[in-house]
Image 1 (tube, one colour):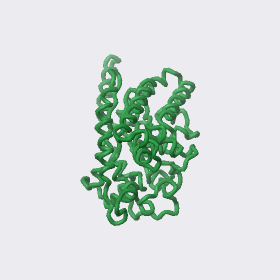
Image 2 (image 1 turned 30 degrees about the horizontal axis):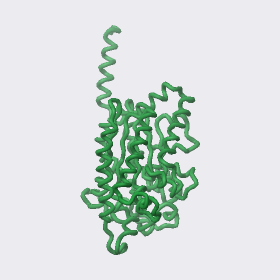
Image 3 (image 1 turned 180 degrees about the vertical axis):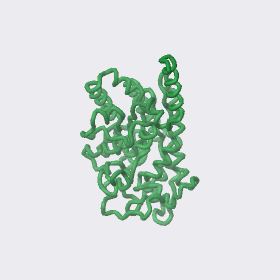
Image 4 (image 1 turned 90 degrees about the horizontal axis):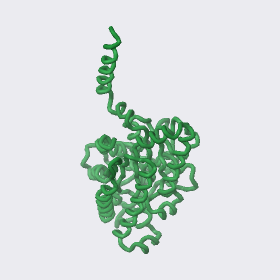
Length: 356
C-alpha cells in the first residue's frame, strides 16, 4: 500500500476509535486537570496539615475508601470531586495540595486546595482555623510557581487554561457563622439579605481573582438544604429525638442564596470564560424527600454514632456505626455518604459536559 493511502487511513481509524472510546477517555484530551477550592464537602485532607480540630483523618472516616484508609475526607468514601476527576479522565481521586508526598505528575493533573470549615466570609474560617478562600487562592498561586519550575511556564499556563475549576463554599458561612453562637456577623449585618450581599461581594472578588490567574472554566456550587443537615435539625428542632424534620427556615435561606448566586454569576461571564452554577440543593432534597428510588431508609440522621451531632473528632473509632451505610443519606451529622455523593455527581454530569 502506498504511503499516500496510509496517512488518510490512519486518520480515519483515529476518528473512528475516538468515537467509540468511553466519554471519560475522550474528555481526558480536553481537561488537563481538576482544581478545587472549598470546605469540608471537597477537602480530601488539607486540614490534616493545619492546626485545627476539623479533621477526618481517623477511623471510621474512610472505611469504604481505597484500602479502608481515613484520608481526611469527611465521608465513608469518595467525594463528588473524586468522581468528577475520574469522569473527565485525569485521575481516580483528587489529592490535597498540602500533602508533601505529591509528585510533579500528581500535581499536573490537579489538586484540591479546600479546607474543612472554610467559607467566603474570612471570619468563618477563623472560627475553625481553616484556610480562608483567599489563602486557598494563594496556594493556587504557589502551585503555579512550583509547576513553572518543574515543567516550564508554557506548559503550566496550558494546564491552568485547560483545567476544570470547582468552587464549593458557603454552607459554613450560614450554618456555623451567621446562625452560629458567635453574634458578630449578625450584628454587622442585621438581615440575612445584607449578609448574602456581603458574601456575593467576596464571591465576585474570588472568582475575578481566579480568572485573573488563568482559570477559564469554573463551576460554582450552591448551598445544600442546610435545614436538612442532621446537626441543624438537632440544634433547632422542638423535638430533635422523636420528631426529626428539615428546618424550613434554613432551607429558605439556602434557596434565596442559590437564586442570588445563579443569577449573579451570569454577570461574570466573559468571551473566553465560562462560569456555571452547580445545583447541589435539588439532588440532596430529592434524596431526603424520597423522590429517588435509591434505597435510602434514614435521611435525618448520620450513620456515625447517634447521628444527631457527631462530626469531626466526635465521630471516631469508638463511635457505633449503622449496620448498612448504603441506607443513609448522611455519614455524620453534616456530611453525606459516598453513595449520596455519587448521586450528586450524577446530577452534575450534563453540566460537566457543558462546561468542558
